[in-house]
Picture: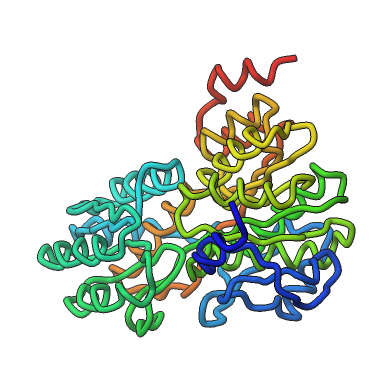
Length: 389
C-alpha cells in the first residue's frame, strides 16, 4: 500500500511521516492520532514503576479517581431489597461476536439472575451508531428500570441515552459515558478496565518479546474512543519511561477491526525489518498475523502483542505463533461489576462514578492459568496439546 493510501483515510488509515518531537523510544517523525494527549506528569510517574500490581492507574473521563471493582459489595440486606423490587434491565451492546462481549454478557446475566433482575432486552448494534440509536429507541418503549450499555459514540448516541434516563431508568455505562450526562445525576457509573495500565502492560510484553530493542510499530483504533485512547497513551508512556531502546518508528490507525490486515500490510511494506507490533485487540491482531505471514515474516523475528484474551489469539500463542503477549481485560468480572453497580443504583445506594477492573498479563508460560482466570474453565485440549513439548 502506498503512503498516499494511508493519508487518504487520514486517521483511520494513516502512517505518520511528518516531523514531530523526538522523545526517548518514540521516533521524531511519528504523528500521533488527533485525539492523542501527551501523558500527564502523573501518568509518567506511574509508568516508571517496575510493578503496577495493585496500582489503579486510570482516572475517569472527568478526572474521577478509579475505584477498584474488587471492593464493590452488596450486603445481604441490600440483596433482599433488590430482589423485592422485581426490577427490569435492558442491555445495549455496541457489538457481539467476540469473547469480550460474550463474557461481559455472561457476567451481567448471571449476576442479574442471582439478584432477581429480569433482562427484558438485549441488543447488538454491530458497530453502527445509527443501529444503536434505533436499539435505544426500542428499549425506551419498554421503560426498563435499568440500562447497561457501551456507547459506540459519545456524541451521536447522547440524545438516545438521555431519553431512556429521562424516563426514569438508572444508567450504567460500559467503558465510556456520552456527552451531556453527568455521574451521580444522569448515570450511576462507568465500569471499565484499568486501560492506562493495560496499555503499559502491552509495552512490557513487547519489550520482553523483543529483548527491549529494535524498531516496532503501534496500530491503534483511530476513532476517538476513550478506553482505546488510554491504551495507546499507556503504551506510549511506558515505552518513553522504561524502554529507550524500543523504538516506536511508526503509528498506524484502523477504524474497523477487520482492517487490521490491510493496515499491517501497509506498515510492513514500508518498514520490512520491524521487530514487532502493538496491534490493538484480538481481531486486528490476527489481521496483523496474516499480514506478517504474507510478508514472509516468522514468529522468531516478528512479535505481536495485543489487548484482550480471545480464543483466536490464545490459540496462536499456544501454537508458538506471532502472538507473543496479551494484556487482557477481565470481561466476566467487568460484567459482574456492572450488574452490581446497577443493583446498588436501583435501590438508591451511592455508587463510585468510575470503577476499574485490573488487566491481566498473559504470556505463553502462564497461558493455562490465565485461561482459567478469564473463562473459569480449563484450557481447551487443542491449546494444551499445542503447549506440550
